[in-house]
Amino acid sequence: MSALFIGHTYIDVTMATDYMPVGDDKSVARDYAVSFGGNAVSAAFACARLTGKADLIAPVADDWLGHMFTHMAATYRVRLHPRKVKRSSLSFILPKDGKRAILRARDDTYLEDFPRLDVSNLKALHLDGHMADAAIHYAKLARAKGVLTSLDGGGLRANTEELLGYIDVAVVAERLCEQMNLSEEGMLDYLKSRGCKIGGVTSGEKGMLWYDETGAVQRLKSLPVPPEKVIDTSGAGDIFHGAYVASYVERPNAPWVDHFRFARAASAHKIQHLGNEAGLPTQADIEKAQADYPVAG
Image (cartoon, one colour):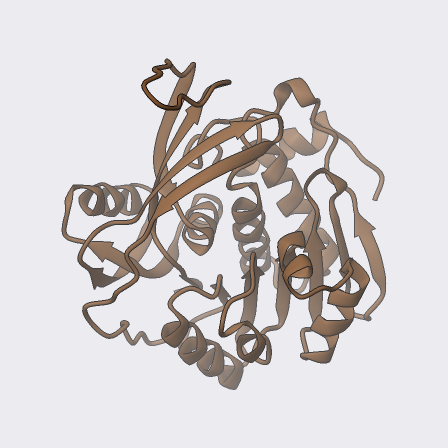
């Protein structure tokens, strides 16, 4: 086991359309994609794509969507450790003009306890706050063993404050700043106060404001992908997380600015593709994005 991810599983149905029908209207989408979804789940697939393997604890149902997800995990060499739920969770995603509307149906009523794994060979743990009991259990275990812990802070959850006490690398979204009534700079100060060694706030095309190993605050610019090439921004942040975890697993002694530069190129690749599966980058895809869209810093 090199990297362990814990999060909630979705099947994503992404529809490329300029119009959302209402009432008795009908419309035909230009394109669609069906893929795995979920924050830490998509990050796990990205890491597996880049490193050849990843472990994932996530809810899985014994239904057709659950069978589909299990097959996807096997295809991408994500070693799945399922926690049983009655029904699979589903997301409908409508990307448009650099944004995306999302409608979800979720089953997070677990029918069994979460799996207990041997983490003696674990190099990194990545969480998104879902499956709160498993998240805090493994965060404490990883911290005790000196394993790098990472959090995708996409939004405020009941366990966010407690969880941050065991997190080394916290990269959060602007939405969390809004929910906590903090500026980007205020959020970085908060993450420092919780003991996070690396902290950042992602802001889409504005890039990420973050602090490095020394505590120095800086902005990492996003790669300048032309607007006409941006197809689907959904999942770009998840791919970002999975890519920096992969970079850390492969080069644990590299500075964090290198891991994040690698990850932003992975995100730049993702937004040019519809759906999470099509947007999974290879090493070659990341190198191409870096070459095609050079940026200082």
